[in-house]
Image (cartoon, rainbow, N blue to C red; front, side):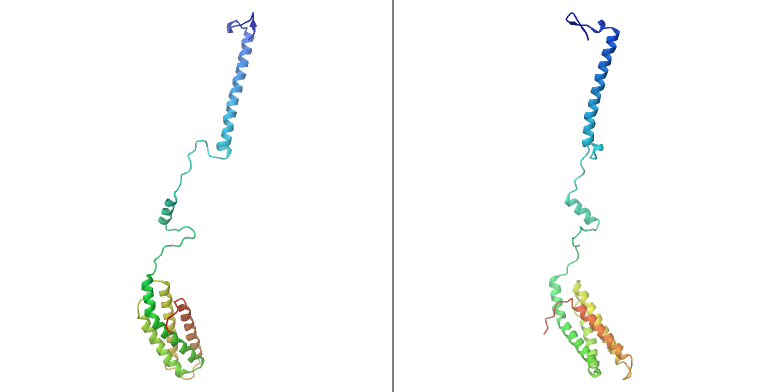
Length: 213
């Protein structure tokens, strides 16, 4: 606004041209102010808002899941974390020790008879083979009816060995079951007996060493 005689003129005293000029100046100032506000708040949005690749301002923080809650969910779903061993039934150590003591003599007898059968086959000694096979079958039957093992991998090894020793005795019995002295099936039966004995020995290798001398 122009000065006259040291004083400012009022709006009413301005000419129409001066009024239009004043309104134009005020409008420009307003546009600049609005643009400054938009730029200021727009910059903040780009830094911390969605356009900046982050979470929107004022967004709620992600929920915190406790270790205990996660563990409970894992158990409920029937799964275990990587590297964790699943909980399973543990054999009663005292009962397992007692069972090993009960079967020690059976293991010693069967292992000795299996060795006698092997030696008789290697020597082609039918006179020694027949009684050895008969005694092996009887020893397996007695051991099978002995003390029941507690649930454990040891019990599986014990049962697998007994089955294989019994199968060897069955193959052996076929040699003397009204078979002529010279028969082409006898070498095949010898091989089956040895294979069954090998399977039995492998199964029992998972057991504790016997204490019998």
